[in-house]
Amino acid sequence: MICDVFKQLGNAKYHMVTSTLTELGVTDDAYADELEKFYASKVFAILSNQETALWHLSPATLAQMYNDEIETGNFDIPEEQS
Image (tube, rainbow, N blue to C red):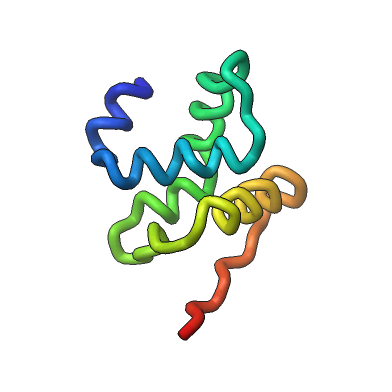
């Protein structure tokens, strides 16, 4: 499944996901499990939608959004900064 998602995302987006997991402090031992959880998250669903164009957000911001989702079941999408 992870390989299928990798192929679907492309290199740049996959790198963003892996960078986000690194920002979360995910270790090698838990990496596959955490990757599956992230792919099942609402944050990832929004990131996967081409219309939202949220791939410009930093891994730290994505990690915060994901943490918020885990802790509260919800998250805020940051305003675009100019």
